[in-house]
Amino acid sequence: MPGRVQERAAKGPWPRDPEPCLNLDCLVKRGIIAGIVAGVIEDIFFIVVSWAATGSPFGGARAASAIILGTKALNSAYPLYYVLPVGLAVHFSIAILCGAVFGALVAKIPTLGASLWAFLFSGMVYGLVVWFINYHIIAPLFQWTWFTANANSPIAIVGHVFFFGAIIALYLHHYARAGEAS
Figure 1 (cartoon, rainbow, N blue to C red):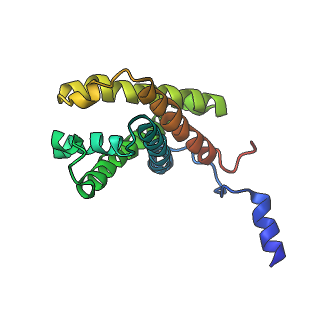
Figure 2: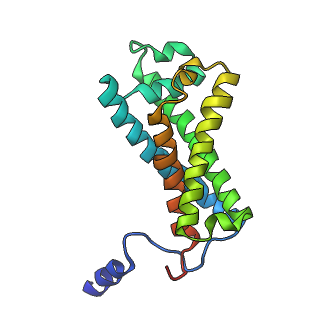
């Protein structure tokens, strides 16, 4: 058994596929997983910030769930057993879609993923674009005023750029280049 443990330790904490993932189908699938991973990390960031700023960790879940449940979900008296599952479903649906789109973009525009730095830069720009589209196009279009009121919040921008876009890029870089020498 010691041989197996040493062999696993030598591979590192991230399992690698034997072949790089460079085609559209593979990158979209990996993008979906990257969206989930980035969604979790971004949620943790927003929970901590919301808790520090307002004393409640549920501000983001309330905002996301209000897209489906209406503005009543923004009220702290509205039950969390409705807010949390709906908010998470909304947020992760968007995160999965955005991850898949970024994977497709990397497949179609290979220079986006030419190196770690290209991946990271393109992911951060992508996070900024996602933030802009969500807060400045979609929210006003559907009159989600609770989003437009915080549209230019530095916290929202930082969350989307560093805790969403950058995480998707790092995840895809790792798995897109699996099997290649780093």
